[in-house]
Length: 256
Ligand code: G
Ligand code: MN
Image (cartoon, rainbow, N blue to C red; front, side, top):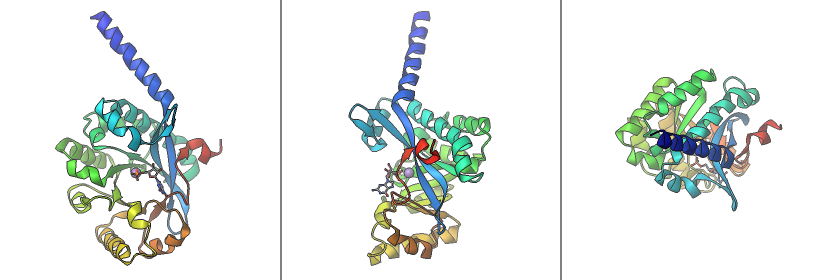
């Protein structure tokens, strides 16, 4: 029994060390409209491998399959809330926020709410400054435990976001069934906003729904400034994209 326990402890320690060494959190700025001031950062997990830096789409499914996402994800959440309390607060002020992308599997982890609650208390940050992003296309598979977690995080005071809205078809159900605060409108709907009549009509409808239900809106994937005027016309509160900054290590933004 002692041998078995010590083997497990070593494995945990090894896993923790590897996670801390090979995974890091990058940050992409989110600006307020229309003045374009940076008011928050989306935290994005990156895996540093011999063949380069990988984004979650390249490894998430594998990590989830072997249950590695839980420790990796918790590590990333811990970093992001720690950075919020220190560097991000210095850069954006007391209202600045950090957003976390949580997959359906992560949300199904029963200990997650207590973990995030502990971090928020330890670092003494206003929970509203912790944004939780749940992708629209994960909604369909929302089981009760994931939905419970979203509700519990909202009860804690966290800000709940629908991510990549418009990339799937479940946004309306989501907005109805979950305590949503923010809509992040997907790049594919924002891209052609200046040129496409129909995209403008869809985004106008989304913005009217947001206004009527008191939701804030983020435009994702801004790569040039020609769309910014339309965003202001539609009442977008925030914008994000390569035009304002790519996901980078925090030191890029702090300059240290
Ligand atoms: O699903 P989610 O919106 O969380 O995805 C974030 C990813 O989108 C990041 O990994 C980032 O690299 C990518 N991204 C962010 N801004 C832009 C952009 O302006 N253009 C493109 N093509 N991708 C972007
Ligand atoms: Mn996101």
